[in-house]
Image (cartoon, rainbow, N blue to C red; front, side):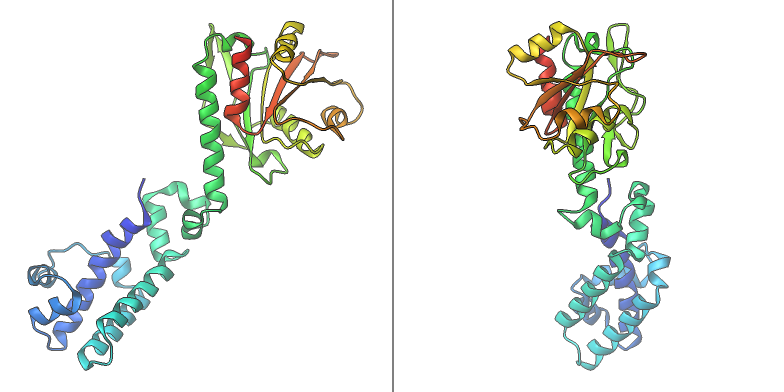
Length: 299
């Protein structure tokens, strides 16, 4: 994990200071005057002068950086610019270079995972999609830990496998729903999770969740487990509303059975099988950990 502020410190500042120190020396500043102007020690100025500080070639040759160095050097040498104004001008350029520009590019090279997002805006926006996406992934991981740490969960995994899914708040397709690629399977009595949560990898459970949301249910997560009458009885005894639907219904069976219902925060839907269709129970709720926690009622 590398912060964009580290790119500023490691790449921009040494390069900018080295260029500005050289510019000021060329204008007749002494080493002590350069140090005072830049707010650094004389020994640091000496290191810049002797090339002992690592600089970034892309920053050093960027026309905007070169222009700012020249403007600040001229302003400080003539007295037309104060150190405060010089700092403000540099900060403005840094913010500009961070937003989908040079520093943002350098940041993505250090963290390639950022390439598919909107750079600086995404990682600095507290209500942005990137933060929400990662929060949903984290929520699914927490739910998975609960499931895999619950003794006996493997016995609740149906033949088709289980999946734990959670949607973005505005989800309208499976691409907006995080799930486990390849599903969760029972391997010799152990719930096996094949990979990290990804978006757009579940059609089955994600489709059920989308249908429930389309019917007006205020739910963001779902988990499928085995169906049998005992499972439903145990869930009802624990206080959960359990609703049966017909998987062979000619329209969307989940939406049809839930449409217009006053549903609780967490509820159960199930189907007892059909032609070529394995019976399945679905737990739906506000988030992945809440849904996963329902499993403990059965074990």
